Length: 332
Image (tube, rainbow, N blue to C red):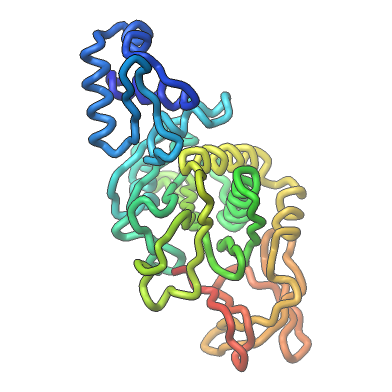
């Protein structure tokens, strides 16, 4: 690590107090000039570091630039050795994660970006990813023996996001099948799980879980077609680094017990789908149905207008019948 990274790590750990240049220099076995240069570089990067004569340096509470150091210090102890990569601008964290997975990046690698220029949702749709306004992360997971169930890992990721948001805020988000998190009737998070195949064995080498959370989106910047659909957490003082750490920690815990009944039970308890009228595409036909429940493998159990009961295991649904559309189920 560079002196700059080392200084940032200490400032993150000691956010509540000023640390003198001398203390930092002694802790890192460098000169006070090296510390000063490191602080100046951090400030130029966008970190809000206070520098007060006779007091020293302190990272402002409002400083919220994503950083490896900021995430690592907040991860549960047993996950702090996992890889963390932070980009200023990237096309898509999922695209990068898949490349890294093919290059044998280890289990638990976390990829973050301040901005995505080609953020992706399901079925090739785009994901609105403005700079500094959201949390754009992907996690590489290594399933045992090549087994894979992207539906259930998406279920686990949705539960992880809800738990993390509730732990750090007073918000109570809900899950819209299969991969959206809603708050106050608007989408605040989308999840995209993808399998990475080992071409030699044909088995699943890795799973990549992409999570995009709208933290503080300026509605004026939202494309017209997304207004009224995209929401935001809008919590003053919420640290995105802390949110990354909470989501990742929960996801790692849930992935370790992916088949446990408690996960699907919690997903059901957090669902906003029960009893809702929906429409979905079956073949070339658009069909109306009513949601009855969620199956043990994460499928959406619905009753058609004909009385037929069926389970949807994939696809997009729109809340509201064809005659009364009120909410889009597309990943934007």
